[in-house]
Length: 162
Image 1 (cartoon, rainbow, N blue to C red):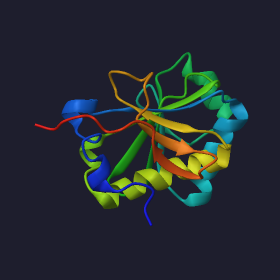
Image 2: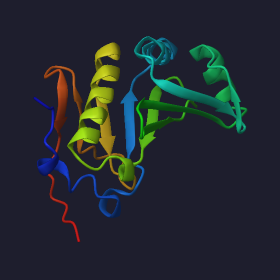
Image 3: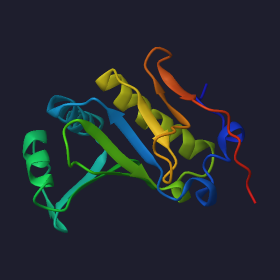
């Protein structure tokens, strides 16, 4: 059974309501947590691309990546499935932040991929993974709940679609 049902959350995935690139984050992290995410990417065989100042490089260890983030424009792109992209911004060790493109996440199949991705990260780190509107990152609407061991709605979907 899926964590969330598309019909229950489709208004949350409306780019006109949430912004096209909602914020996903894991708070209170460390370099070890970043490394755990990098190890997860490798172990799952997820496609990824690491770049600095626009040049694609081999994925380094977390401490190297985070050290370069201050000096260079660093980006880590991860595709947990074809057509579903998460763009990580490795600027600081204390928070793992990334964006997803809602235009790619339309329907139950893509929602299941996103939930599986959030669940995998949350389980690996034993921490909540929160998904919030691009314009209001302080108010997450869904996320991985460690105790429930699944992705849950954090607020009732009160958005209306045109």
